[in-house]
Image (cartoon, rainbow, N blue to C red):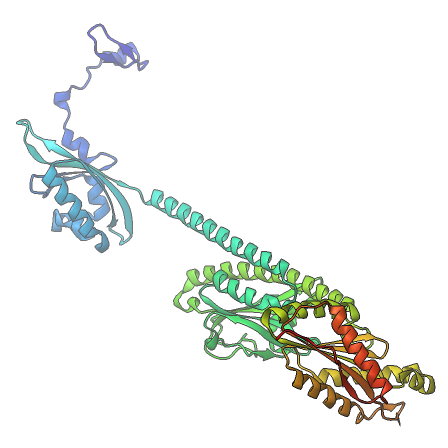
Length: 501
């Protein structure tokens, strides 16, 4: 391009002298309507009342020439998507009232029936006398752009949802890592599962100790509508049999697990496996899936499968760690012969209960028991028989006392029982009943009956006061010594009072 002497712009086209000698077309010779008709974009013109008075071939080919010839200006309105008609009329109304340019997006039905996305740009048309005469504008098909935007928006939504779900799983893991027992995990799993799978009903199943049954430990969602049985056999679940995820998707029950009843067509069972050990499974029922069809339903279930797998893997690592921790903890606080708590655990528990009962102004009882003539019994019948006596006496203690009571093997043939939240009368009654029951134990060793055994008991009581644990143990020990000196097989209550009135 170069600047001419007469201040007009000339194009440097590189054409030959001969071509330049051919007369150029003049503006007067151009038929602008013909140009508009054949323009590669959709053009239109309205009059002052909004009637469409001109459309080009692009428009006619899109709508369908027969429809345009038959319906005229109404062909465009009839091709509008019903949901967009009010919006377009509102934009037009405002433009004709204000004579201002406008832009609007809408969907228009092509002659083959497919709706396409369009954007219109309209400019007010002013005639030679400076009067508003209508609008002239163009329509551009932006369907591909809209599809790309929708895909990008969908991807962004999926990423946002994924980040939200991973954040919930990270929160779940954070709590699981500080749990001190498997039982503590159940309400935590239920709480976070409801948020991770908000439109689902589900349950966490774990094997029992003997690996013979799989029990539902916690549930979430609409729990009274869950279709899976609370206790199942391992063979009743396809995922437990195969050791991998099992999904049903509208298969009319042919691949349904035996533990799942009628009324649910879409669910997942995901095994929980850690270090090669099958711990249980996650069972998820998709309540929302029944409202989805075709590809939408398949995509929904596939996205949930990924999330169920991640959740199950995280649960597996936490549960196997807790089970190991519980086993180690049990070994450190349990007596290996009787499986009662050991002396170390007794001392920790007693100090804790003394402080708790002092704060709550409750009573606290301590029973110190010693099997009578145990050394003589050992010498006469052997250590194996002596061990049998200790185990059977421990079983009697477990059956006799409450789950809140702490039963410990203090050492040798001595046992201590800590009884929180008890009054003195009940404490003495429990000790006397135990003294009576032990003499009725029938023991067999190598299919031969052993002689009856008896025990002596020292009892101490504390109420509404704070003392050293050694003081109440000493009081019970003195009472026990007195019981043995008085002929054994009896209960003696300490004369020392640990009561703040």
